[in-house]
Image (cartoon, rainbow, N blue to C red; front, side):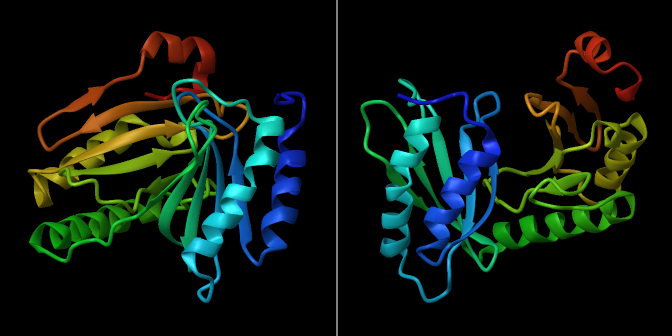
Length: 229
C-alpha cells in the first residue's frame, strides 16, 4: 500500500540515506510525469561491481512501494544508474505481478553510423550553446539527449517554455538545411515545476519543414503569454 500523501522531498531523503549508506550518490529524483515513471538518478563508484549496485537498487523497492503505487501495466519507478555521470543502465520496478528488471545500456558501436550521430550531436550542442544552458538534470533551458536510438534524429528536451519560439524553430531548420539535410531535430517539452505534468513531443524540425505536435489552443489557454509559439 503506497502513501501518496508523502511529499517528494521526504521520499528523496529516505532514498538518499539508503543508497548513500551503500556508497552510491543520489543525484536527483523526478516525480512521475505522464507515461514516465518515478525516476531516481544515481552515480555509482568506479570500484563498485554492477551486481552489488543492482542489489542496492532492488533493496530500494520497499521504500518506493510505501510511497509509489505499483502499476498493473507498466513500470512504476526507474533507477537510472550513472558512472562518472555517464548512463550505464536502468533498474525498473513496480510493475504489479512482475519482478524488478535491470537493463544494462549496451556498448555503443563505433561504426560509421555512430560516428555520424556523434558529429550531428556535437554540432547541435554547439549551435544551441549561445541560447542557453544544456543540462541533463533540468537546471538549464534545455538538454540535447546524449543517446543514439539508431534513428536520424536528435532529441532536445526543453525545460523552459519560453525557450521554444518560432525563431528557434526556424534557426534549427536552417541549420539542418545547411549542414545535415537528412537529419531531424525533435523538441520535447519536459517543463519545470509547477508545470512538470507537461511532457510531450512538441515540434519536429527537418531541413524542409517544421511540424508542431502540440495543441496550440490548449497551450495558449494554459500558459497565455508564456506560450510564444
